Image 1: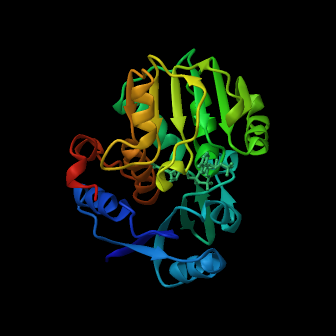
Image 2: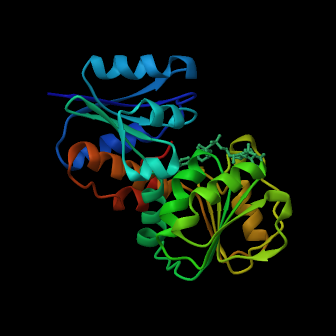
Length: 271
Ligand code: NAP
């Protein structure tokens, strides 16, 4: 029987998730129907419950619904709890489970695909929204010497850093109070690239790795900025997207997809 999955967001038409999940499913001869659901925040809860009531098996959740998904789930895993956000919903028996695969996806891309060793490094996350909350704790699991969270609205960075203080050496900064600090890895977890902007950064990225979690068919403004300021390499978030999708796929189907084809030949999958 063909099982029903979907990604829910607002907007969502740009999502690559259907192509990725269909490709993963083909690797395992699984038949599935993976659709896009665009719904405004006010309709989120009712749309999700309707999806599952009519035979839906699993949902990926994207902007702006990850916090609502976290609240709607009956039980959430540790990754979602640390993020206060869920990007994957599915039922186990009568229980709606919420998980967050964004951070695992980023870590797999950095460590597995890009072969980076971040032990003892200084990692800077720009942003303190849903995506930053999802990636911060998993990044601390890589044993950096220091994690700095810098955000335009400093209160959100402070709250996130306080939440994670038991997990490592975490500091909060206002974006405009970075003082030309040296970093080894800088991750743009803001939505600024989407609106053709880059945060103004007083950060020394010479020799560093720059990673924009937004994915694009050409280098993002943030990647261009990092290259112009001496970064050793800059990457977009395609690998993170593929790996977080693979983790969701595993949660739903209990088999691992091979992500190598999507990493090696993104043009065949990315629109
Ligand atoms: P969000 O919760 O709305 O947070 C947005 C963040 O961006 C906030 O920290 C906000 O700062 C900051 N921001 C927005 N415009 C800015 C600007 N012009 N200058 C400086 N900071 C700015 O969004 P999100 O869920 O974190 O998503 C962020 C991005 O990550 C989205 O583009 C999303 O598509 C992408 N993402 C990619 C993946 C992947 O798999 N590759 C996974 C998840 C998310 P304030 O707090 O000051 O408003």
